Amino acid sequence: MKSMKSAVTILATLLFGIGLGAYLAHPPQVKAVGTVYLDKVTEGPNAIAGDEIVGFGCTQAACYVASR
Image (cartoon, rainbow, N blue to C red):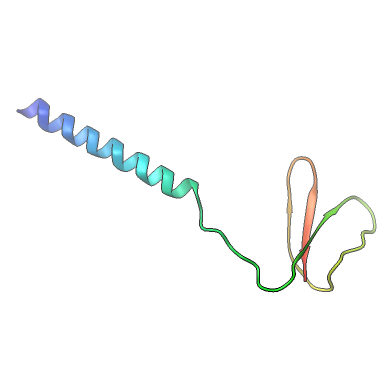
């Protein structure tokens, strides 16, 4: 009986951990309102499509600027 109870506890904990991991691995999507331009930028002067910069981000390969 004691081993059955501990097995059920371990199984429930494992399932909870898998469910929590799956939930946290897929964050909610964000949708932009209006027109947002995404431009790849390089070193030096760059022409940005919009007039208001609303965000930026970099990967190992390139950097990007979001503007309206």
